[in-house]
Each structure stands twice: as structure tokens, then as C-alpha cells.
Length: 190
Image 1 (cartoon, rainbow, N blue to C red):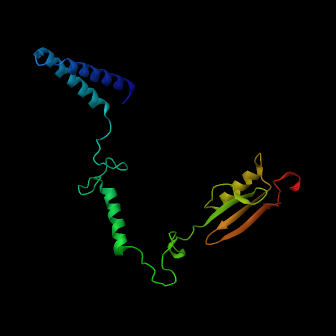
Image 2 (image 1 turned 90 degrees about the vertical axis):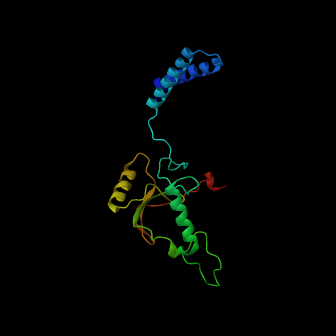
Image 3 (image 1 turned 120 degrees about the vertical axis):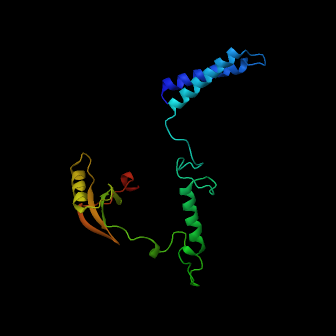
């Protein structure tokens, strides 16, 4: 709704409010026809200003989504997700450990449950005390090396850079510069 539509609709609704306050049992028919015309004008303005579809569900995530009459929020998408979660709780889920050594499962899962890391290259820089990530991990090694080359040529290069290959483990592929431990306290903590 733009500003002009909002102004016109507000004016029409205020006129209707004035009509409502002035109504009595002996209001003449001519005045009622005027109220009827103002009501139609307000409805037409409202219909012009409404652009989106009416909400079909009570779901905040999917207001115009498909409807499931049995769902509390009428949303078929959310109800399908809830049903799948309930189904996985009762037999369709992952098997519970039966070892006496691990009576309860970890809230973070076990190593076998986690997906293997994807192959990527991590550009890191030496900040004087430790290696820190200095850019977005890259899927392409050449792109990561070009990024580090641009960092080295930049206005404020770090003391050293390195490229770390991540797959199932971390492996340092190449180091540029020499990392030196820098004490953050002046005068060596004296």
C-alpha cells in the first residue's frame, strides 16, 4: 500500500466513523444511502490497496501455504515436519546404544553420525601469537592461493600466511613468511 492509498483509505474510514456516531433511530433514508455509498468507496479503496493473498494458515513461517485441517496451525508443511519427528521418535529413528559402557547418548552425537568434512582449503594468517583464519574457506586450491597472494600484496599484510588443507584431517600445505612469537605486553612483562 502506497502513501496515497493509505491516506485515501484513512480518510474514507474516518468519514464512516463520523457516520456511525451520527446514526440514530430517526436517520433519514437519504443519509443511509450516503453511508452506503461511503462504505462502498472505502471497500473499493481497500480492495485496490491489498496486493497479497489472504492468509490461509495460522503459521508465521508459511502464511499462504497449503492447508491441513487437522493441524493446530492449519499448516500442512509444518504438520508434515512434526509428524516425521514423531515417527522418528517411535521406531523410525536412529537405534539407541545398547552398550553398558554408554548408557546415555551424547547430545552432540557420535563420530559415525557426523558427516565427513568436505575437502576445502583454509587461508590462515599469523597474528603474532597464533594462526587465525583470514578469509572464507575455499573449495578450490588455486583460488585460495590467489586470495593469499592478494592479501600479501595488500596495504596491511600479516607477518606470515599459510594454506591448510582440510579433508578428514588438517594438513599444512604451504607457509609464506616466518611466524615469530610476539609478546603482547610492552617491556616483556617487567
